Image (cartoon, rainbow, N blue to C red; front, side, top):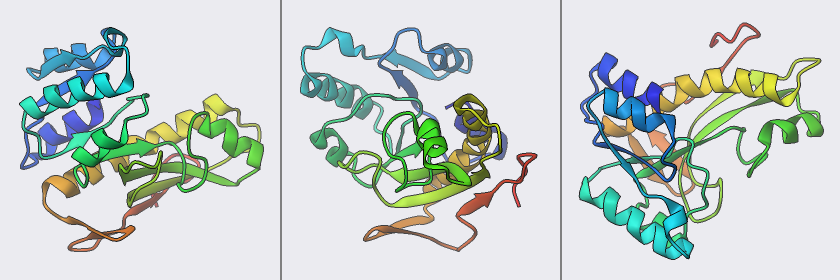
Length: 202
């Protein structure tokens, strides 16, 4: 989340980060938001007895800010279909794998267990199917001999911090269009990033 906020300010996007909202009162992003003059709000899922009730309350808070785009960052709860459909075409997520490979949790260990030679991250529009939806951008990193899940996660995180701000900027500039299961970027430019061993894009 911080990388998106910083990129928006540094690059002068035609956008305003309206709010940072978390379901965890101790989320570090809330303090960062407050320190940077951004509204910081908590909707604690523990205050609700059902997912539906939580999602409805969360949507009310989000809609109060009238956002054009909802950006999920470190939000580890499965959202109801009704919530996702309410923000269809205007909610992005980043997932730490090269989707459609390795949906769900523990993606880095999944990649190691599968013996793949490349791993990475995907930015996608959110749909009711978990870790699915039209892919906006992807970044790939090598899986190195001797990697454990933590080492691989660190390498993937570095490219997440590149492609997520890039994808969000494309949206706010009006350059993304969903065409079935594909995302069209206009004017076109690479929607992928390959990282070498040093973590530099090529």
